[in-house]
Amino acid sequence: MSKLTMVVHGGAGPDSEFIKKNIETYKQGLREAVDTGYSVLEGGGSALDAVEAAVNYLEDNPLFNAGRGSALNEKAEVEMDASIMDGKTMKSGAVAIVKNVKNPVTLARAIMEKTKHIYIGDMGALEYAQKIGLRLMPEAYFITDHAYEQYIAATEEEENTIQQAGEYQVRRKTHGTVGAVAVDKDGNVAAATSTGGTENKVPGRIGDSSVIGIGSYANNKTCAISSTGDGEVLIRNVTCFHVSALMQYKGLNVKEACNYLIKEELKDAQGDMGIIAVDPAGNFAFEFNSERMHRGWRSSDGEQGVEIYRP
Ligand code: ASP
Image 1 (cartoon, rainbow, N blue to C red):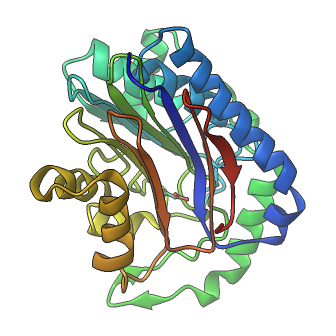
Image 2: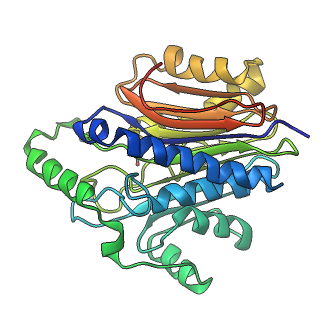
């Protein structure tokens, strides 16, 4: 039996008064997410079941920017992105710009398992969720006071928005995207990520979280990875796949690969980036260049913890 390992993140980015004020509640949420996923692994469930369960928990927790608590776009609407990948089969599923679906990562998994496609967006994704009977909620369910306050603040700062060379620079404050990676008793790895995206984003904008190889990636030959941070920067640098490729092509271990990507290769990248990863032997790594990354972990050799800032 392989070592069981469950790792989650709850977003990487700048610190804020809101985070400082709610630090214990954030830590409690991370602990519960880890325990939710870990109990699936302990009960003999697959890594895929475990990452879905942990992300579902975080999607339901209003403190995090995924599902309930999602960031609002320019029109004060919720548009969510999510992805999931199974390292054993290398199958994946993803949704983007989806509304009203209580647990977007479960929709991503259904797309992976029940359709001939990988990635479905917008109305098509919502219609498919309805068709297979996934739980839908009214818009008001997703919008928390904190997300609305962030929206108002971001709207007021609109004039400070930098428009450079036609590039829209999103000035993010709230980072609470969620992700999970796990290894199960058979040594299979899986990854999942879910987000409301960046506050005050242009309607229809899709970030990294739902893009396979960037938001989530899993391969039993190497590792499972989930990322968070400035979506545009993460996409530009194809983050998750690079970690796997460094392991597969160059023989780096999971810690070395994460460290090399964030601290060496992308050390001059302008933007926040955070990744969590686990290999099939249960070795795990976190790496981030931001002020903080909400994270939690637990493994069958007794290691467990939650952290928000640097050690
Ligand atoms: N990466 C997410 C996005 O750009 C946001 C985040 O991780 O906070 O949509």
